[in-house]
Image 1 (cartoon, rainbow, N blue to C red):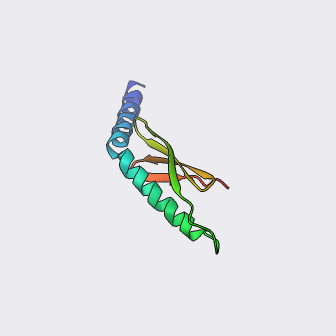
Image 2: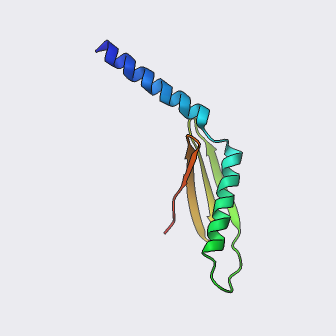
Image 3: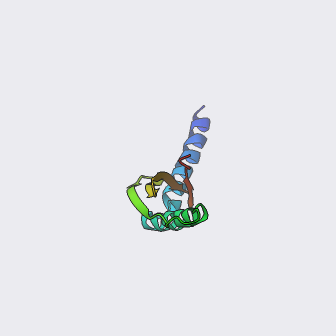
Length: 92
């Protein structure tokens, strides 16, 4: 049983260490989210509409991940980045 707990502890410590090491920098994530949401806004733009502005709502730097909220027009997107990957939800 002690070996099992030791192996599980080593695995969890390794995952935690990788999470801290591979966490994307918050400024890089903000820029990437702004770039992606600008492309999204341009893609969903209807004829005659003005390009909506991408504005940042809030950001948090957690221990192994970062989170960021941004708005495009009236839609708010919530994004989470960890292990060099960022995911954003779709408000619809």
